[in-house]
Each structure stands twice: as structure tokens, then as C-alpha cells.
Image (cartoon, rainbow, N blue to C red; front, side, top):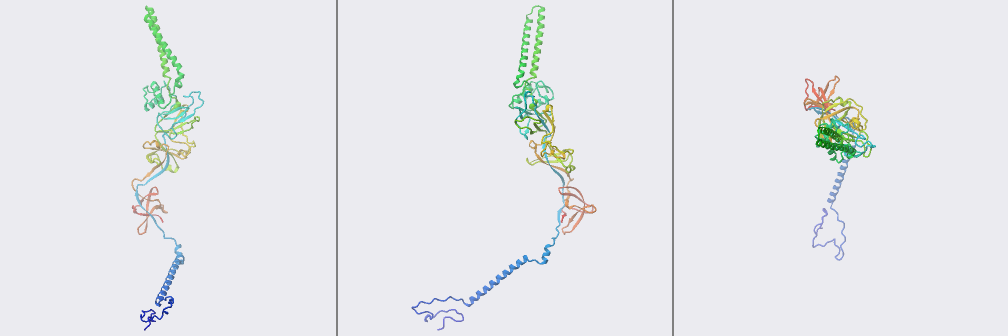
Length: 513
């Protein structure tokens, strides 16, 4: 029987079941361990070919990586020369625009009142000559606070200082029986606060005394009196005067009784004469009492009030600490319609003039207002007055008023050298604006309607002095257009093309390259 495997393929075939297996050992002996299985030749060849392909692929990958590295790090001389060559020039252009051109000057300014009042109480007016020194004993309004008519500002030696509305500075104590314009000013101020005063205008009479007494009582103070506390020093005179009237009245009564009981013409005549004398004495005594009453009682000491010319007002400075002696000026009050002040440099002044429109911006309040330049002063070297304001003192150094604006040191505008500028708002600014640092935008010039404008860098001057712009076409061609330059503002210039040339909105003008 043929062998179960052929030498050509080496693959075993099925065995004849009747033919014993020649490779098997004796029946009783264990089968020997089979040898390692060997792959056919065709499978071994396939594996060899796969290994060769893998090696070739890996080599190709290494060569590719090497080429990439070489391309990055290895440069030819031509490439080096190309890298060192300057890039092609870039032309920068901007479009021609048509709009209203406005030239603005932006400054910083301080909102101040239109005027100011200085106040310093004087020893011996209401406190008495025996007082050794006036002391600041209380501050009822802090510096920077708004002031309203009737407000108590501070206390001096325990007495109030009251702000009253009035255009003329106070210069004397106002006492019962006084007459004058300042008395009329007091009466007007009392009426504005709601205190009835029917005395004749300019006469400090009993109704004025009553109104002043109510003014003090409503603020928690005893009213001042010509006789001191509760009028004590006037009581003896008043008592004597009243007794004189009483005595005169009794004399008149007795004389009348004598006349009525007289018999005979001579007695009646004598009694009538005595009655006449008694009546004259009574009239004299009554007049003396009335005069004494009219000139004593509630008064208004100069040390306890100040007239403020206009409201709104602001207490800008309290120049003493509680417990310290009073020195001039004790108080400075900003008064009147607020204005904005600043100082210009020579360059700024050259482009501004009175009447120019102004936009005011209070950034901290988020509010704006309009106004105009109303004053442009001569050059000043500034002030070194450490923050106080100028003011001419009134009589005895009591009250004084001055023109508006701070002139002190620190960072106030008036401390700088330059040209003082004042801006008056079109409408009265609210009280919170007082003392603020605000932005001031002045419209220095404006074109008459929309005009052609180009960036200032687009305008150039030739050797012949003529100005021109260069227009770049879509093709890249550049054409020089002669122009006349007008006003400039915010980096733009008004231009007008020369006759025979055309310049239109949207044209690209060269601004750099």
C-alpha cells in the first residue's frame, strides 16, 4: 500500500485502517514524544517576504523623516539670500470722508460759586467785653456742605452763627430802634423764612424783635438781648421808667380830683394848671418808657449772623478746630450762581475767545451741562495762598464778600500760572456740582456743514510749496491731486481739490508706505 504522504507536498494523507501504523511503538510501550511541528516551505517563504517588506517600509520612513529634517535645517545660498531681501513695500491708504469737522479743546475746571463771603466773629459784640477769647465750640455744618437760609453753621463760645439771605454784607449789630437798609435786609430775610414782620420797612420795631426771637427759639437758642442774658442789665432802667410812669399817672389822678373839687375861679384855675403839669409829666415818663422799651430787648449781634448774597451756597472752609481760638477768616462761604474756572496755557489761549460754546461733564455725577466762555483774563503767576479765598473784610473784620473762585494753593486751577478762564453755564448748576472737578470741552472751530476731510498724514507739501494728496486706484496706480488745505482737527484736514482735478468721497489716499 502506498505511503500516506507524498514527498512532493509533505502533507500526510489519511491512513489505511487495515494497515497498522508503522510509526507506532509496541502496543504495551508508551508513544514517543512527537517532534516540533515544522511549517511548510510555502508559509516560511511568505513570512520572509513580509519581513523584507517591513524592513523596506521602515527604511523609507526613515529616509522621509531625514528629508524633512534636511528641508528645515538645510538651506541653499539662494534661500538665504531670499530670506535677507527686504519685503515688498506696503501702501497704507485711508478713505476720503465727508463730514462736519469740529475742533475742540479739552480742559479740566473747578465748579465754584459766583462769589464768596468770609466771616469772622469779633470779641465783645454779644459775648461781652470781659470775654478773654472767642472759641469755636461746635461745627454744625461741615466744610463742603450745602448751606440754606436760616442754617446754623458753627457755634462760637456757645452761640450760633446763622446764615441769612441778603446782598449787602453786615457791618453792625442790629438792635431794637435801629433803622436803615441793613434792617430792611434782615426783615426781608425773616419773611422768606416765614416769620411775620409788619414793622415799617427798615425799622427794627417790636414785630422784628418777635421775629428774631422766634428765629432763635426754633433753632434751640435763647435770643440775644441788649441787656445780656434775659435782659438782666436793662431791668433796673425799665423798672425805674415804669415807676416814673406810675407816679405821673397818680399825680394826674390827684390833680384832676383837686380841680374837680375846687371852689371859686382862682382855685379852679390853679388846680387846672397843676393837672396840666401832671399830664405833661406823665407824657414825658411814658415817652421815656416807650423809648427804653423800643431800644432794648431782642437784638441780632453781628457776631451771630452773616448775610449770604445768593443761594445755592456752600460752606467751603472752616478754618479752625473745635476748642481752638477764632482767627480770621473763620468761615468761607461760596455763594451765587456756580461758574467753572480754570487756567489756560499760551497755546490753549491762542485758540479760544469769549463767547465760544462749552460742554461741561461732571463724570462723578454722570451729568452734563452747556455753557459759554464769559471771561478770559490776563496772564497771572498764580497764588500760593494755601487754599484760602480773597475777600475784603467788612466793618470790624466781621463779614466780607469777594469775587468768585478759589485762589488758594494745592491743586486748584488758580494756583497755576497762566490765563484765567471762566465758563458760565446756560442754566444754573445743581448744588452737588459745587466744588467738583469737571471736564470742559470747548468748541474752538467748526466747518460750515459737511466737508471733504482726509487724515493729516495724507497731505504733503512739494518743493514749490503746493500741497497735495496721492490717490491710489484699484489697479495700484497712484495719482497726485493738488489740494488746498483748510482747518484741521482731531488728526483730519479739510481739503479742496484744485481746479481741473477730482477728489471724491471713498477715494483711497495714501497715508504711508
